[in-house]
Length: 247
Image (cartoon, rainbow, N blue to C red; front, side):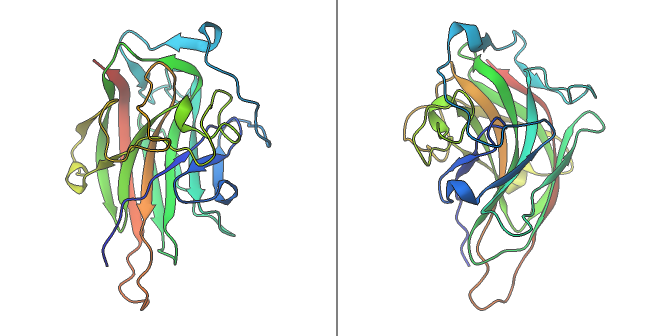
């Protein structure tokens, strides 16, 4: 069976909603370690008052501090799954050891599944002085594909997104596929430019680095074979560290 790379983007913990490429807004479940609103938060534009410049050294998160989970830009970590099931298999994560480790374990179903984790920002971030986002990555993964997204306000659904989202229904961020060879037992540095990605996202507009609101890692589980044979679990654990903007 051939595999296809599907795109979805979870919105922020402010509303625990989604704007996604192939699942309905109501079909996503998310978890967060911080309290979040149970209903959508009215959108407001990024302004000078609610926008912070990216740190001079570019650091987003090193996951080293227990009190803030090592997130240098004010925000939090969210794990999510779509479509929503009776017992959704939301990924688990830990920041012990000074890194973000995400673990997935899902069985294929008759529809594609999308799960992931993100670091969301509590303010709009202006990273226009930088070229993209980089992070270190190691681990193993089988039965599914992995991708990365940097999200801006225009690529989040303004109805169920963060307080700064301005995108129409079904919005999702541009996405870059992480190749299987990039997942090894040795950490590798992955660089994802703002201006280049494998999936343009929706709407089909360029990412705006002056209005960023999250970084995200997604796992896409393909559909199960029609004959029910050869089903491979989506299983693995990946460790991410030193997430930062680069020049």
